[in-house]
Length: 252
Ligand code: PGA
Image (cartoon, rainbow, N blue to C red; front, side, top):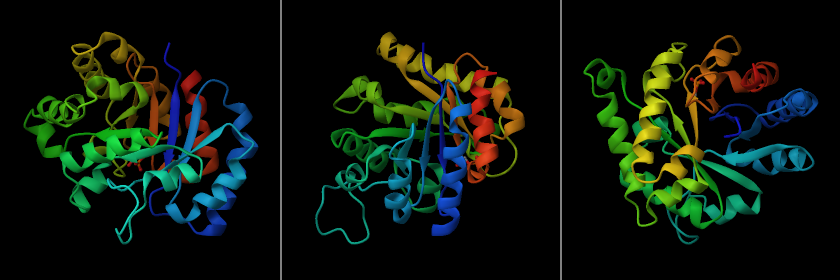
């Protein structure tokens, strides 16, 4: 049985005060979340504050990005070891905003994935198709290409034992237009089957999250799909009550 998992991706949002207020709200309500593992991914500059606040709770900490390099002369970059230093358990890798706005290639994403694992971090590996690719019936080929970059790493499919996958159709991110439960399930099943061709055990165990306009009112139906193991939540994770509602929807 895969444990449901819900992670909040706060992106470049909040102030020090609002982030602390959000964490307070989560701490107050987390006992009502009975079966899901929960993590939040604040901006780098707030990691220390959030780490301190979460230290005695069951909410895990994650980062939104990491460098593909080991520590050294790389101005403006953040190393995996630094994230470990702040008790990060997770790190988001290959988010579509990084791919589209900061030019991250499949190869760079793969290096970041490897560096995350080497540093004892669990990568939340994001993949997803553009609207145009879906309209041209290219969803499966795009997902296959993005996934194969990870499956063909030297560590191969084994790397996915220590990872989480997030399917995030780009057209659904921040648009209010979520994939339907059936659309999402279809791609999740495709991802799991493709991994199973390499290793059925890894495929059965890996958590595959859905991301893209998940809200309290659509979460339960999405999470009830056979291959959807939780969510990566952007906008709706910035409000403690709506994020907790989404976390609780894993047991609906
Ligand atoms: P959204 O973002 O929930 O605001 O659509 C999801 C994500 O980008 O991870």
